[in-house]
Amino acid sequence: MELKCIGCGKCVRVCPFDAIEMNDKKAKITEKCTACGQCVEACPVKVIEKEEAKKRGVNVDEYRGVWVFAEQREGNLLNVAIELVGEGRKIADALETELTAVLLGNKVDDLAEKLVKYGADKVLYADSELLEVYTTDGYTKVIYDMIDEIKPEIMLIGATNIGRDLGPRISARVHTGLTADCTRLDVDLENRRLMQTRPAFGGNLMATIICPDHRPQMSTVRPGVMEKAKYDENRTGEIIKFTPNLNSEDIKAKVIEVVKGGKAEVQLEEAKIIVSGGRGLGNTEGFKLIEDLAKKLGGVVGASRATVDAGWIEHGHQVGQTGKTVRPTLYVACGISGAIQHLAGMQDSKVIVAINKDPNAPIFKVADYGIVGDVYEILPELIEALDNVDDIMDAFKELAK
Image 1: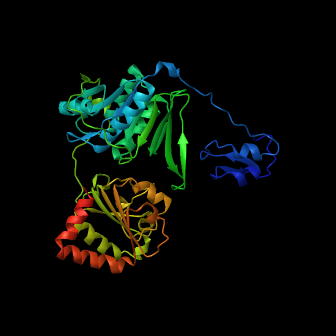
Image 2 (image 1 turned 120 degrees about the vertical axis):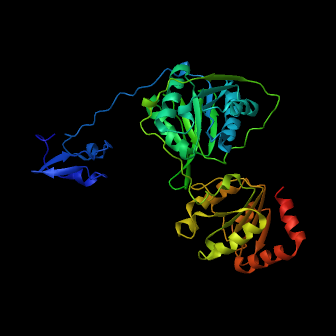
Image 3 (image 1 turned 30 degrees about the vertical axis):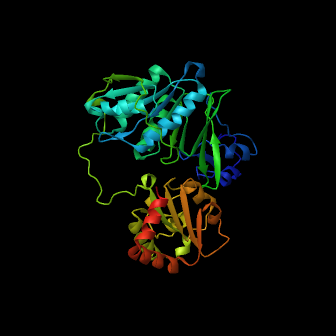
């Protein structure tokens, strides 16, 4: 390129990554280059070329079966694992194939039995002391070896802290795609393709992504989005317990000690009652009322994205497309207008109570009960009433059943 470059600088101006520099009136491409191709189109003398790597695919007909990663911690099965078994069951039935739960751990045989009762046809149970605590290297190697041998066509992983670490490592190892943080899954039966839908551009639109040429088709799925599988005590299935080909040298980073934070994470996805605050609170002080009401009702505090962005409350409380998806039995929305991004995260709640001074707020369209008024007038009266009138408290509890 250097011998033919005319030094016009057009490539420098169009590069979005500042990856081209002018040196002695010649363009030089630096290591910042991402091969986006903008400079190729801009070059007036066509001296910049982009080498396209040949697309590598696999024989998709060799891959069959739906897998879900059954995440467990300290011998307890996470709720998202049960949700994935339920969703995986629907997908497997549509594709007329088997549903397999992938369980890694040490002496968690009871969890393997539970996964069968929840709907798995098979459980691949890797039992090892090296798998008792999650490590990226250990879990990745074991699951990669299973995928390489058995060849599933779909694998679902919960979008937890562990899942978001594990999913990309596995997908990179097997050279397939990964759609992260999905909120909906469908199947193109004709082509056996998983239609993976997730929010994009800050939740302003929903993108549906496919992986046509590589397998397995992989997704991380947001906790709380899918319905939990139903437990059936009479259900039977096959449990394949094995000792994985794993030794301590395979694990580069070892867990010496697990220290839990002093402040427990807000478990919005598991809460039966959620009281959420929105921009209508006006400031962070409004969340004191939200906390008081949540405490009276035996619930937890939620929030809209606007309040999190404003710094009024931590991100762990955020409900919506870019926060957490919840489906409690009672959801109380205080000062929340009802933007589509927020509604997408809570509209499946069993009972929705909305408090807003704007009678035309979109939240009232999904609410089962609406109160038009100022939250600073209504919430104190409601809290006082809950202190003094047992009947009102019983009524709210009845709604939450």
